[in-house]
Length: 355
Length: 100
Image 1: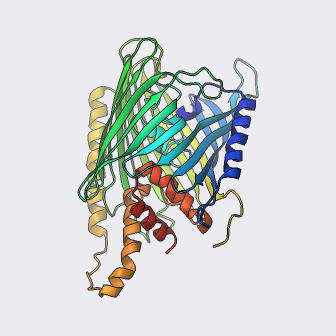
Image 2: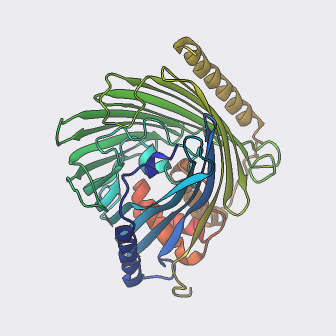
Image 3: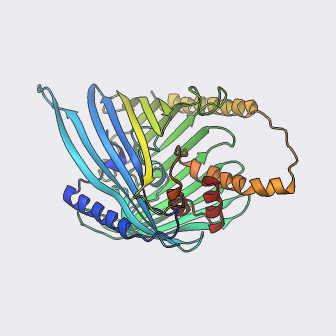
């Protein structure tokens, strides 16, 4: 199973490359005011294998991210995915078929007016709940697969074309409230396809408890005009390397939730020791279908899935991901074994000014 | 696996998680509070403040990358300012944390 972020509708490679060149050109003309503002290239390169019900697939992937500041208030940023997908030939045939995909995940410009107002314009990741805009990069995810409900919002591609207003509404020492509001126009453009819709997210963060709770809402403003509701809870206790994240999402035809936990021990020489680099991860999720209208990417029958994994955080920004999942549904139960390795890169786009 | 088993599994996980966190917090070595001089305080405050900004914003989603060129630290901080709605002061503190 591919990650939800990769399940974008196939976009023409030539267009993607052209857009990427455009982004690079934007980087090239970026005026960076100080020696620390050199445009950067970051991202992840990974190799994943997945054995689902006896079929093994292979997925080499690169997710580059470009970021270039312009002046004191503007940032241009973009992320893309380039992958080759190898899957067994069907029937009695031996060997593998393969297909490739190149596409922009987002391309946006940000104008930071103050901490309370940031204006985002372009093709942006929809911040409905948290997975899509915070956890989907391959160098951040704990698992190779995204949650089953990751695509449950007004835009199944996960991106919108238009504008967004985001910022911090209230900041106190005991709590803070962040918000965003977005509007997306309808677009049939091959590279920047999007649905018309709008929505927003508000989240409350308690820094002492390291607890975040938030609510999301968005609405499809074309065709059936459906509503989507979401909620998330994150808890990352202070002075521990334990994290618990969860989301609930409900759409017109289906709903579901996931709960994920990961932990690293500091008890055996710290996080950088051989044992401290081990990261047990666990995710439990369920989806519930109200009807069989296929419009949201969720399984067609009620599904329960539990993922157990061990990640290993190697030195030099490399990470090994391994997991075993059991998935139960009326259409059949099966096991999913996944392994992969991801390397995160981060370097200046060019030499830049010396300090 | 029916719903009851599933909910039971969630409860077990939550209990184990709580125990692990409690054990971790108890095993954290206690550092005796020491009185710092005003100069020392002033010298360490920006670093502490930058670390706090990092812990409360950046590391909620991801671990810190292991080393990067100081030439891109301003760009990284700008990226985080957009993502986490940081103030200009927090941006400066974070930049100082990256480049002490």
